[in-house]
Image 1 (cartoon, helix red, strand yellow):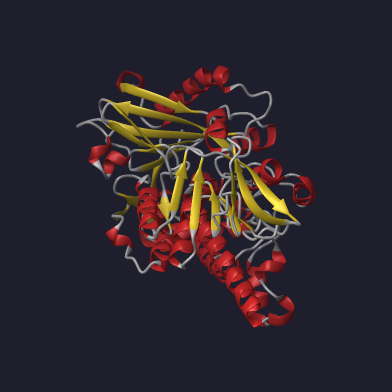
Image 2 (cartoon, rainbow, N blue to C red):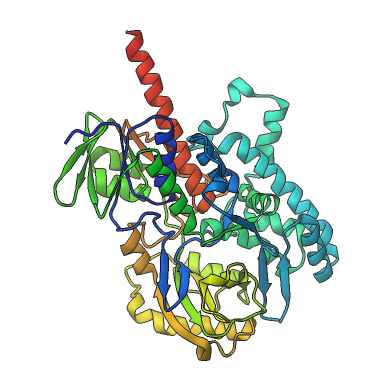
Length: 509
């Protein structure tokens, strides 16, 4: 069947962002989603008066969303109500310490200084580095299709003292942990700052120092909560897309991208239907797109490139409690006793950490309607390795659930949590793998490891297949809500540039 225009595979945040941007620029867009809902991992679970965001829970860099809505001349405030949070995180430690990452840099510095006076200046020094790295990322890395160093800057054409300064600021010889260790003495403060890298599901011991810029993106631009939960984001994007005429086809599983002479020509579904398009955007995992939907020479070429390892996965507990824990903030981290042991287990041995860090979202602090009166709707995430053949989470989950709850009891003052649970649901790495067609159950796409190339993901314009564009957390610029949204915008912008250029070329002939 000839439809024409652009076909999009997957209605996650990247796919929705691409659909809205393309439709706003006048493209005909058809989006296929195998699940009955749109939004990908940003799904919702509702039971017995409790409401849980099932996937991402922290929204930063709202300017990315604003840019997508502005493509259509819309005001984001007409679609979403965003609340800025303070503290951004509350951190709990095994020794009883509680440290808040405050909303302003001044207040954050004061809280850190109260814990360890010498680290107040160290925090200033770290944030100066983070600001510089965020500036360089905005200048060379964001808002365009990037796959490797040569895509970021033309050194021959633009070599200057300023460009050289930008290159040197990337600190390519250091990891995130190495940079933080240079600035911060207290291990508790280090552990808090190292966890910015968990937005991309990687180890601070292996991730490049350029990703310290995430700290500025959060502290400089805030942590936000969309009323209605993060599920409200794909709902708003879907509404915008529908207003712009996007054709949504849910419950349709795309199983093949048909190519001819190295170009993407059509999508084939699980029931054998074929839909022809001028161009295609895949919001499916980039590795699985090439391996399972295309195969052949394109997959061989992609696979011969850099080693692409899945980022970490995780276990999520969705707990409805009959009584709230008032000492929790909206976002909380209950830190492991030993981060090197934790990261060594997850990223080195490929096994769940014996004493993990647990992230807790308690959105009733901001929106009472997520739970019955007096209750609590907790989202508890513990990172785990991506799936290996030896992992059987149907067998592993009961014991690891006990490990998680024991951790909360010991370090976060939640000793009676079992007595408060009235609703409990779980998500395991196997569930994530099966539900979202990600690589080996990874939550965050591909790992960001390697001092020089760790920040680079597959580019949004395919180098292997003409007319194919990539969006989502396993494509540039990477995982996390703002980056996945930005990936969709970049894929759409790149596609639009190519289509416009091709049309001008044809007209000139």
